[in-house]
Length: 84
Image (cartoon, rainbow, N blue to C red; front, side, top):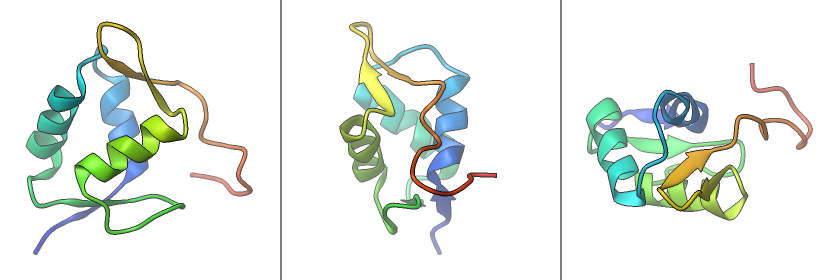
């Protein structure tokens, strides 16, 4: 049975590492959470690591900094509820 991981756990993981290319982030997520893990946020459920990464890139949570993708320290508010 696969684990369902909240996107904030991926954010916390990304905050602990320097910017990396997309494929390295996906490998790190698989290593940390398991290759069969699924991901969810307040916006979507049952996502693959690739889908979560693309969601974060699409909504500006992560951006390509040239040397790789980096997470923005802020951005967890603004849509009507707390993430505590």
